[in-house]
Amino acid sequence: MDTFFPSQQDLETRQLSLLNALLAELEDSNPFYRAKFDGRIGPFDSVAAFQSTVPFTTKPEWVADQEAHPPYGTNLTYSRKRYTRCHQTSGTSGKPMRWLDTPSSWDCILDDWIEVMRAAGLHQEDRFFFAFSFGPFLGFWAAFEAAQKFGGFSLSGGGMTTETRIQAMVKNEITVLACTPTYAMRMGEAAKRLGIDVSALPLRCILVAGEPGGSLPSVRKELKELWPTATVFDHHGMTETGPVSFQCPSRPGTLHINDTSYLAEVLDRETAEPVRSGARGELVLTTLRRTGSPLIRYRTGDLVELAESGTCGCGRFHTALPGGIIGRVDDMVVIRGVNVYPSAIDEIVRRTGGVEEYQVRLSEKQSLAELCLVIEVDDSRSHPETVAEQLAQELQRSLALRIPVEIAPRDSLPRFEMKAKRWVRE
Figure 1: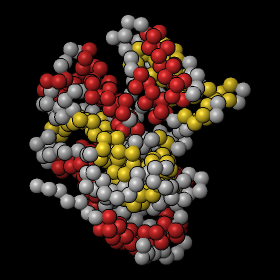
Figure 2: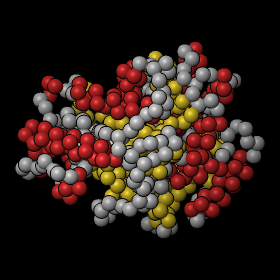
Figure 3: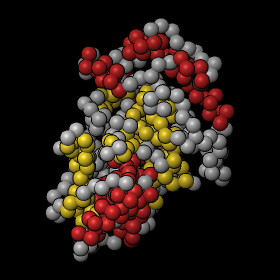
Figure 4: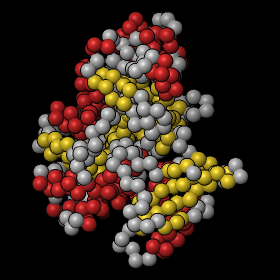
């Protein structure tokens, strides 16, 4: 049966309706936005009018709000007794912050996750394995509970070692693995060392998130080599917003914003003006359905590229981001006049091959930033020095920078289950 998607006009009509309903809900009952808006705001007759009138929300604002009004801040639309979920951010770019949800808001998050699963071509007969620690972060719990609501078999990998997780996947005939790209690589390498033929598994999809790697061609290629029967399907989200985007089924490496639940803008970092198609800018989001603790025109800090508007090959009109989340705007470092993003280094390392794990060491010499790459070479390579030399050449060719590459002893560099933290400031 054919699948029909909302037209661009229908999407915009829905967004405006949800937006005005959200603003009306916040006007009298949300202390954070009542103070921020300083009076009545909306309703609006167009999204453009909203975007030209309403100020941004920034992370420092709600960090300051939670510090001033611990433990949850004032971005609460309802009384505290209506909130039944508490999650916190990973603290990747600062102090971890807490986020509350009502049952209604949480249900919207699960529905958005189910949209990710449907876009990936999953169905109720699938058997999901979640290779996460199940700490306080939202993504793990939302994905797990969404799979249950979706009707799939759901197995938690919390508290297991990597080897135990692989064995659990084999014994339970898992068809869908959910984890970070880095951890999917680690599991694939561990399966090889254990002598497990992963091609004999019924695994057909690896749902990845938490890092930009899921949309990088070299990372996708490496994952496909490690897990030959599985399709890599990327998505992204944040604790403060929920699951925001999903991979385009017809264009791997491109993410679609779920425009039925989010109002997205891509703006120039300096001017705050909309970027043209094909240009890069910061992703700004308004959560249209998470009314319990919403975000209005939130500057996410994510760097993305905006595709041309119009119908996609998959039939959707949703906002498209080629290359997915390219990086964080505050992660960029300038090395001898060249802008370098962590995702660019990751792409080069994976493309070159032969590297089991790596670490980027950032130092400052005479007020100038310098990089050094430290690598563990794959056991299959008999000449580690050759791998290091090839990588140094590829870095220079791609970035026009000479970056030293050093070889580390086997298993000396950190391994990661969640977001990989490979950049170290010395």
